[in-house]
Image (cartoon, rainbow, N blue to C red; front, side):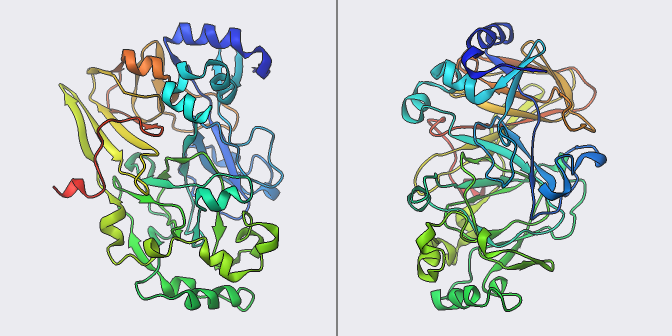
Length: 410
């Protein structure tokens, strides 16, 4: 397809928005990770998991409605960035946002951030990944980046099997000291550094989720995960060997100032210590779905909600429509939508959940719902014979009212 350059986006964007009544069709955005092992549940064709070359690693992520670049060595120029498509042309969602601003992302988000500051993805790994953390905004700013709080939801439709380790280590055991953690860093080249001995694993449950604040250690397990998060790709790996694979020191200090990359105290101080050793970690971070709205033949559920350090940064809902039913979504903000089951339509756009996707193939499962369309209302209809299910995520402060962590128990 023809790629429209950023300075020529205005005309095709206007036509696409008018034709879609504020909806933009997005194309699949695949991201490889050189240090991970694909879980092979994100519907990519089995022959295409190494489509970018074995040296780049396997593809185990699909990013949604992203204007954030993936921080990979040897990356393609557009890696991590979502494309919109319309009548044989495609253009970056990032360019569309730069052109249309508040019409796409909403006045508040545009005025505050001048961009779409969040994204979501499917993360799909065969086994666990290293115990790691994402820096706070303050620490990330030291290397010209932004921090990365994130959240998890485990969609049943993309978890037909557990893979190798459906448990996630999170945080550190209460009573752990900085000296305990320092010894793990000192032993980086002396075999397994033992950091998981200082942590606790939680069994992952389909249809539930977690909030992960910045500075909190976590070693995601092997369920396929839907992850709304801040628009950044910073991280620091604190575990040196995972399933026999060595993790280089460079991945611990990737987003640490050059003069601090051997400073153990500085590296440890990036952690939010109190949140890591919280004795009520699960109560303060675990999420279960909550009904947001429902009608005849449909239900809309919160799947990601709550605040990170007091701020509403992102959220997500899962809409389920039964065969032959329809509903009108009227949201207070823009969202990125991915269809995870069934077939139907959203406004004038078809929705179809793919079974197998070839690398580079176009699909009909992903849509960006502009702020304008969301406020006017979007009709969604199930035209298939099974439930139509879609997950959509929102940007910061989208909802005047939103559940807090723990509200599912009330």
